[in-house]
Amino acid sequence: MSEIKYPKVLIISDCDFHHGTDATAITLRNIFSGWPVGNLSFLQLKSYNVVENTVENKFILDSRNLQLGGLLTKLRNNSGNVTGTAPALVVESNVSHLQKLKQNLRLSVSSSADMLNYKINNDLIEFIKDHEPDIIYLLPYGRRIIKLALNIKSRFGIPILPHFMDDWPSTIYMDSSLSLIQRKCTLKTLNTLLNTCEKSLVISDAMKCEFEKRYKKCQFFSLMNDVEEYLGSSEDDNRSEEKMSLCYAGGLHLNRWTSLLELCNIVKDNEDIHEIAIYTSQNDWKNVEQYFKEFHFVVYKGFIKQTDVLTTLNNYDVLIFIESFDENIKQYTRFSISTKIPEYLSLGKAIIAVGPSDIASIAYLKENNLAIVCDDTNRVEWKNVLKNDLTDKKLLKKNIENGKNIFFRNHYRKTQQHKFLEILRALKINKNEDSNH
Image (cartoon, rainbow, N blue to C red; front, top):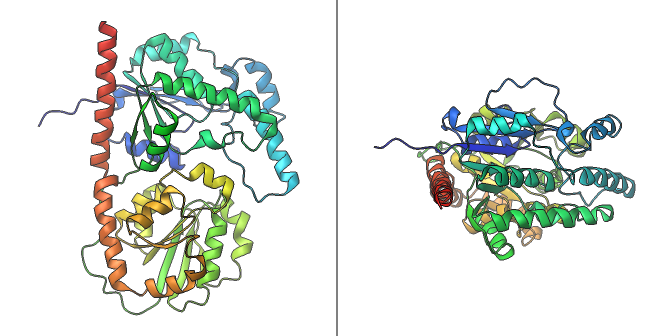
């Protein structure tokens, strides 16, 4: 078998590839797992870097590297750090008028700062020359990072492969009347990117269909979140009639907690359920724990490190997947497939999904018969659906079998990495052909 040839890739993002615990950092590490260290380099964008960079193949840019960087550094100390951070992509709808005003003001400041370009200094030029990337892998989220990638492409002739994890172009600055000009400039820069790029990655087939309608000049490929191996047992479920333990693991922000609360209200009289364990950050739980105090079966169990997620989830009978019904947030998440889905499917467990029917994650679980789905189409029947389906072993077994098939088709790491490599190789070949003309 011939040795795999990995292109040299410059990753431009705002996440910490090596130490980040957020979903984006985890996804990136999954995509590039097994990649030769010498064939990866990182351009990380931060608000204000106070930690010495100890990673040889990483270059850090912060607000001091921007146009007017000195002024922004002073403003940063008095503005709650909004001048250099990534722009807010979505605003929750169920907040007070005062909170909304504060969000609008902060958004106006951060969106205005996002209009400023990074200065490409000699150190950055030397860094790129030293690593000689074949391709720029870009996680775009606003004008500034896109403009940086376009400037590097123009200077070095390196093709860009953007990867969209969510539909931020639909939501960015939409809820702020003070940021309409910034929105227009951001979308104009995005159009320039996608008119320039030959190919782009998206997180789901639903997003692929939507983006193909919007951006005609770019070819889109769906690259879904993956897991290294299938861990589900092939043995029949011989669990006795004892009560079931359910588990939710993940963030409760973006109004997801309201969907979980609704589920708890529905099952509070269900005698088949012993426990709903919740694993989330202390900050997320602190913000909402008051709403769950009445439910004796809800137990907060802290935060799970990513390395322990699958082992921990494997201890439960049923896994809970939730999305928000908030209309603003739906616009942002409607084409995304959560990292939770491949993790859940890999364990061969029964799944309860709660969320709106018109977003990709819920539709994916429903259309492929992978979960017991509680959405807006059957809301009045949730109690009966859960009571009946959770005790229907034949149904649960069929869902798990479907999940195994879908896992190997769409979420098995070896398959997804092969697909990713083929896309990168095609870009590299086209780059070499263009340079020879």
